[in-house]
Length: 247
Length: 268
Image (cartoon, rainbow over all chains, first blue to last red; front, side):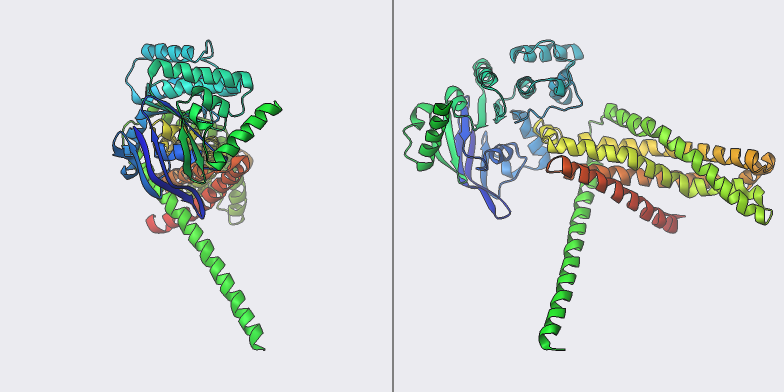
């Protein structure tokens, strides 16, 4: 289980998280939503230990990761796979090298076994015959798929998604949503996703956390979220409905 | 002078002192961060896994890739130095010393310094640009997220490769530079070939070569560290990467010249 306990983080005078509390349930898909600059990406970076909170605790399987040293944090990250906003594929490596990278770094599998695993993961995310392609030869949607294949190649118990559909067209957005659901159905591991995309969150998430002014102001299932009485959540949902109407 | 004007002068002086302190503070902060990264690099260098494939790749990029520009610089440096010193020595009929003077200058100073400057311009700038681009496109963060230490993966192999390859490049610079000076001295200035070579044998010692190679190791560590550090500091897009590349080349070049003086003064 992942738990944020009274976590605060500021950059200079700008307070991003202000005594934030959140429980991410094991085996569920949790989405964190909120306006730009609300601290969604910072939350993921804090969880990965890429940033240190100013105060508060972040518990992962009962361990407070804010007290861990750098080497211990590196070990902790074996529990996580992460799909970055722009996939963050290594631009000088081809698709096979990108996806196989964690296997070569952290396992002693043979080349044949690695090739088999990479082929399986790429097949799982709907990609074939792309091994030799460089990231700049792929579309945005394909890059995300390769990023997801890389994120799950070590079968981590927790997968993090940083804005998985930003910049993608509606069809690809839908496909990525399907992919998230299929990947989760196969493994039942914990998914934590940050997104602006309400439709996506409604479709894939078991729980949605609304982050506003550095705090989680609502934490509910998609079905219950619409009954929220919090003014920000009501405005956010209404704005999304207006956008949908405009389409 | 009225009191207000005096206060104004004091305020101006105070502001200048404060801004100087601010610049000093920033410089010390950068130096501290760089030393801390250097320490982490040293830790990563001795810590398994040693990434030989990356080291060999970098040796190829820094060494083989810089070979042409090093040879080109060396041949013309040797030639022009022979031309200038040969003509100067001819005034008091000591032109046979040209070979030994050029060789001494090349082995002790010019070869390590010019090789380091050329490698900085070519490979140091590329290191800063590559790592800077990776930094602003979250690729460095992705390394950390995949439980790979970015310093161990990106910086340590570059420092090791630079330190291993630079003495070879410097030796090639020496050889080609001396060859250039030989051609100009014997074919253009008509200096006796036997005297040219004999004077080199007489005046130049193995220690002179070793001194240059020793310096080249220092320069390699400095230029790779500064270039990698500048790349890692890139934050906000292409313009910042460009700025960091410029800083990498400028700071490395100046550092090489400054450290060359202190190494020579203190050690040799």
